[in-house]
Length: 119
Image (cartoon, rainbow, N blue to C red; front, side, top):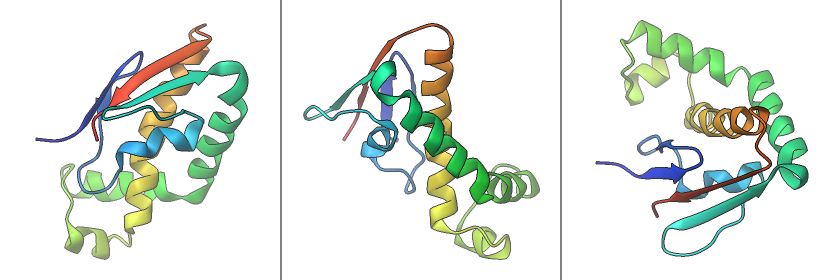
């Protein structure tokens, strides 16, 4: 069970960590029931790359990666506490995955991206 997003990019929202509106962080615009997103590279690429850079510089990716490697890709409140990984770190990690997909899609030569997210 879980919530997915699909369209030009696809994935699964990280359970109990990442909300369905995560795409808005990277310049996407919401529609209805499913959240329908449309992203124009010209309008959003600078925001997208800036947000990815902020996440990279936060140290969250390294902390979460280390925790996941040490715990065979599993985590819970105890492993997070032991690894000094916050809920915010987990959100950053999950959002980074989505933002990176968006950037990679644009870097492949596309100018527009659309996807639907389950609410």
